Image 1 (tube, rainbow, N blue to C red):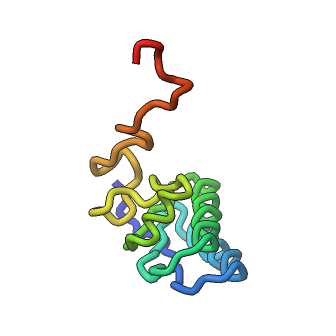
Image 2: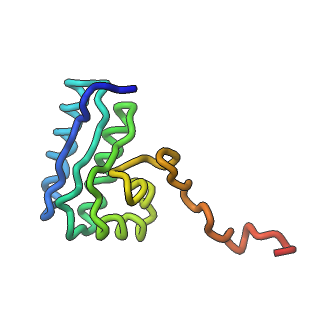
Length: 126
């Protein structure tokens, strides 16, 4: 188990596209200073998320993956969770009761679990 503290980046509520490179640089620097730290993003202030918020999270996820880790979200508000679901990135938020638990941990279902199969994948007997 990783005992090193997380490398945390905090997303503000009012985020602009100009903020995204700075946030990515902050996460890169934190991971470079502490390579075994768990990358995390505190999104609790993002109560009015938009597509800029989604872009920032996607880019931060890439920074974490390039560092060999998985970005965890902390304090995901319902509005952000709904927007992540809408754009197909709901698995980023983890379970509603857990702040950023990745899928497969903490009882989260894999994406698409329980959803009906697309018509193109259904068998003729369905």
